Length: 359
Image (cartoon, rainbow, N blue to C red; front, side):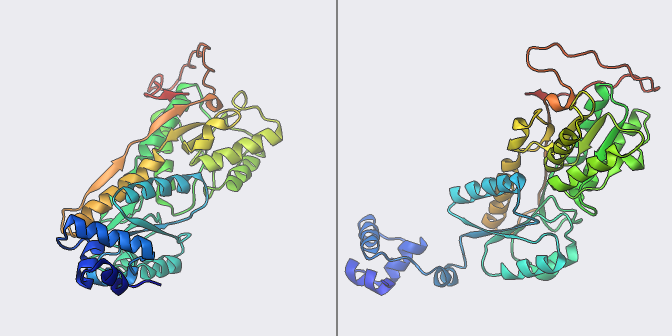
């Protein structure tokens, strides 16, 4: 294996000059730089990453701690992160915690000294855990975390408003009996989406029914199971709002297996608008989160913190959501005239449909 001394000897320069070229740490003439790069390529020399980081105090690596790596949502988040990191010459080191405190702590400790900055997406993360396991000088961006305080840059999704608007849309279609498949207990996203759903119903004069708020954990299996429980009730809802698309897909499968027609008998909607949503049968209405952009924005926020040596004023941003209306909620197919919304009889008057995109 070629060493930096081999490159220096073949290129007729000092070891320090070769080091400056690969670390981009000082002036080197264009001719010498090209000669060094040509020799390095011929000898198949590659700088030792650990040694290089000791010299430059830079690893050119960003860390990302996610609750899971399974499913389209997380693959899209990682895709957005990776593209943004590569544009700036960084690599991405990804780990998952499954929201277990011991795994979160172990992952945070493992990334010490290996990354120039860290993105943490853990809806169950508490501030003491983060502070105890991350050096104060390390730039950190919190992604969809419930951590309070002003000590970190943070990026969140418009969860509550997105769920509120979807529930309002179902109300505008005349639904009065709307069930909710909740996300995981203690999860920040799930709690915010449940708040939005309840707010919309209460504003329409409808008190949410506990027996129609089904437990879920953001998996297809939990969506399937929730539908089985709803169909066993004496009174069925006319619409089901799943707190994410994976559970909505499980719900569609359970309804199809039970012989219940969607949306004629029960409408189904989700949250996230993963790429698969439009290809379901019927195509799934959802609250669109720009998922890849979520990853991109998190990396861009982290790189700004790195550029400013973590001495910047902390930023908080919220990513907007939009409604995507497809046939699973009873929206008309392209070219059909929409049916008139059923009149609401509450004192608040008819519920108007919010702005939405249609597919």
